[in-house]
Image 1 (cartoon, protein in one colour):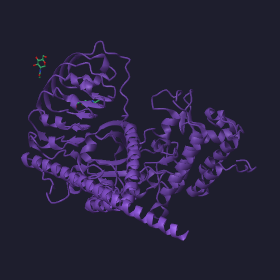
Image 2 (spheres, helix red, strand yellow):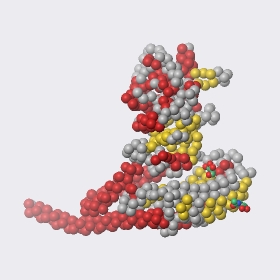
Image 3 (cartoon, rainbow, N blue to C red):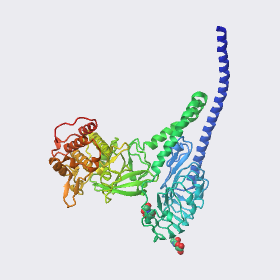
Image 4 (cartoon, rainbow, N blue to C red):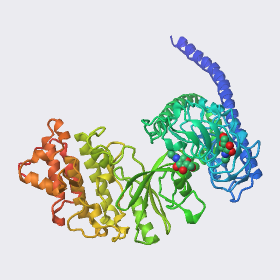
Length: 633
Ligand SMILES: *[C@@H]1O[C@H](CO)[C@@H](O)[C@H](O)[C@H]1NC(C)=O
Ligand SMILES: *[C@@H]1O[C@H](CO)[C@@H](O)[C@H](O)[C@H]1NC(C)=O
């Protein structure tokens, strides 16, 4: 018994030994493969680096670039970005470097993994750099504002991933190549301000969202396929717009990029995850290979991490900017993922979002299709130092219910605040529709749960703002057009802290009418109690769907607070609420409770109003099936 047992154990050992010889061989082979792969990557990056060095050496430029041969390309070189594993250069952005001359041959064309190329606003001349046609992975090309001449390439179709092309403000001539039609991914095409002539070809570009052919020398008629764009994109040509389809709606202003991008990302990460799992299990067995890989990647991983820190957290100190020009500097906050400078902002296509109490807001679409809100402040009454101090406090506040300030800018003539853009628009738009739009046809009226989330979120945001500066910070400009929905559909507040730095004379008190607490005669002297009042008005607005100040059909001016009081006093409480809310069963108690919270915020005496954190608690209790207190309002 015991003998056979021993034998079988030995057998197992023999078997194991044989196995291990096999697996050792396997381990070695895999290790070698990984090592080779790793070396190959190293070579590819070296080639990219050399191509860049050749490029910069052969093309004279006015501003120096910090491209040091001895420093890592991916980490240190201005304008250069690499792929995730740091093996290839995928993006090159060198706007406004002052290049003089034509793009040298056998340089950029070698960056075969390049996806984004921006050489805009330089002095590049010569004909179209045909060299670039070798970049098969190119998805965005920005060559606007240079002195390029001659015809556009006929075989533009080789860029099958091309999504954004901007060749505007050059001197290109010849006709528009019809081969553009093959670019299935093209979403933005700008040839404005050139010398292009001939007829516009019939372009079938299903993904095209933005087009500009203005100010060329084009003739003939606009083909049917492009008549969905506004006439304005063809102005400055001799194109006949007579048969233009007048009913065509303007272009959708939100590029689909954002959503498709995130899809790609999730697809990619699924694949990447799978890759990691497979790799990890292989490596788990094959320790040797892993060791080699670690040895080979170690240096690189460190670089990558640092690179991420640098790019991702735009600034560890508060005011690091991508522009070298100190006078023209945007100050970014920590955690800002946007890669833009003032020049980008000023060049971005902008759309007016609204004229607010303190200035005009624009939506700016940056060249990488990300969107930000730029607020142009007028009548700032404080100097640079005070302005910066205030912005630093504002920018410090990071909270899910507070719209983050990303950057600011101060010069004698221009004061800008840059913050996140919310596609859905403000709560004001959701409640009342777009200004000038048809008020009665809202696409999608807000349901009760959403309104509760908006109010609760906004309350939390304001409560957070109030904790800043030793618990003394004031929002100062609470109204429905300053409240947005975050990704969880809770309210979040924006545009705070500006009231106190504005000159009072330029802003008649009437501007914030309806939201302004009665005790407030000077908007700069806003208090936390006056914030609570404004918030109360906002909640009433949510409940009634009526603007804080509105006129009836008989031109009578109605103040929301007074109106609600009068209705409640007459015990017609039910009449107060938005008819839209009457659709939902079993919310009466919640409605009345919310109304009571709002009314407690808008009492006349400032010291009798609840504190913001108390309001938050009341709102959070709203949905917990608590029995209603019997006392009336
Ligand atoms: C088209 O380009 C022209 C010239 O650069 C510019 O003035 C205009 O604003 C652009 N139009 C659109 C819709 O971008
Ligand atoms: C514009 O086109 C017309 C005819 O197509 C030509 O005669 C004229 O010289 C062109 N103008 C420019 C500035 O190229």
